[in-house]
Image (cartoon, rainbow, N blue to C red; front, side, top):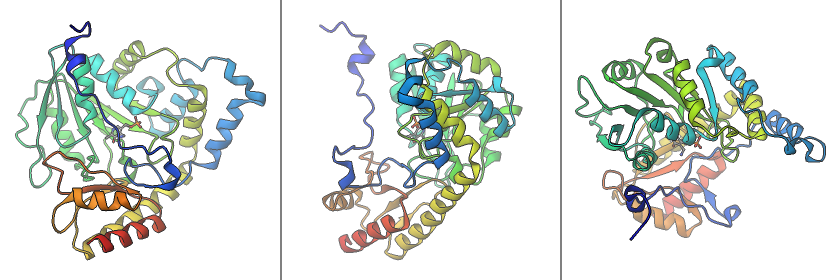
Length: 350
Ligand code: PMP
């Protein structure tokens, strides 16, 4: 007999992309990390924050991450009361579910998208409702009035990489009776974002991450922009010292160096577009991507076969066994040289 809550005992738990222990000997294109280092100014800010002999580390971080919140608020044109930073956007997604959906209440999202929403809803004991996609990448059978407590719209979509047009996101915002979380983890690689909807729709919340475009996956920093009432709810729920000193310093410095962001994002987008074209040349079907990865299917639509063949060459990509996705692979965009190496391997594998 288990003493655990039933849903915790029975849930599978989220399994992140494979992490080899000897990561340096792999070409790792399976978790959408950035191939370039973070801005040199970020590294300087982290070292300065450590302080001489690590002296600053004995002190707690600012519980409200005030400098970093102000930097984000100024950059995006919001009052700081509309902004929160957190220990990865995963923390924000978790706390948003806790804030909006009680036990037995409904959490909705698009399938396929980020399957961690389901794990978080299961922990909370919430009900899950998924919506499929139409051929032209709209949500299938989305009701005129969606009554779920919270709905997650991932745009650009992961793992498929397409982005919803802003007018469509706005339409969905108007149809949601509950909160609409626009998960913009990959938005810096796209053309459009939904920040303006936060001003116009009180149920819209935008979440972002520093793990991809800012190349700070190892620091664990996320950001949300929403109405002050939502931000103060998230502030009540979170651990009080959730964002460590180094992460706060890194976040402020990363936001301040938009030129570096534009440079590295520009390179990744150019590599992505070249890689997509080359993949098509060797017979792959590639979904046009607005992110730092592509979803591509080999001519025989056997994603697992190609995954295994790449794995044996120490190239890691992502394969999902879900029947909707098993025909393809999600491949993160690395440097030009890394993508050349991957293409060479794919040509050999056939
Ligand atoms: N949302 C989506 C769609 C993601 O793919 C990811 C990263 N896998 C996250 C959120 C979480 O990002 P973070 O590293 O900030 O927790």
